[in-house]
Figure 1 (cartoon, rainbow, N blue to C red):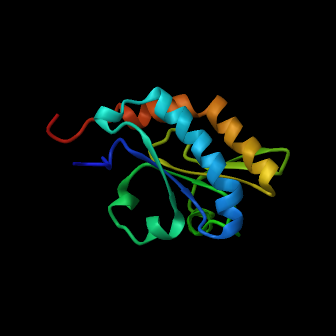
Figure 2: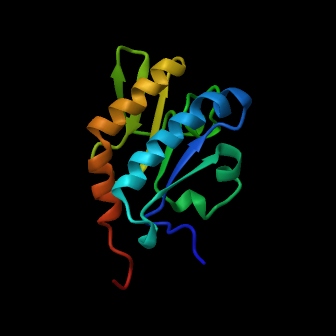
Length: 145
């Protein structure tokens, strides 16, 4: 039984420390609910939430479209991507979304200067970017299709 399709399954990665688990994981599950409501689990068009350490230790996961939630202080993946993601969308200089505007790079980092700001950034991503992100990710064709 397959659980992840590296083209379609979207991973939502949170930090592995206590603060991230308590604060960012609920935000990740809220985003997962939005993605899953638009997806098709039979085709593995869904989201999976996992910790940054688990993600970083598994090369196959690193091929999946991935959204990191939480700042560099609590999420190692966000810290790694901080300078490599091309665009930053800021809401009041406290909430940030880092992404490639055309989603040719399917990595996204969503974070804030505190928990409330991170939640606001997740809300902005869902309302302003999620549908387009899913369109790009889920309309990609598998090789041989």
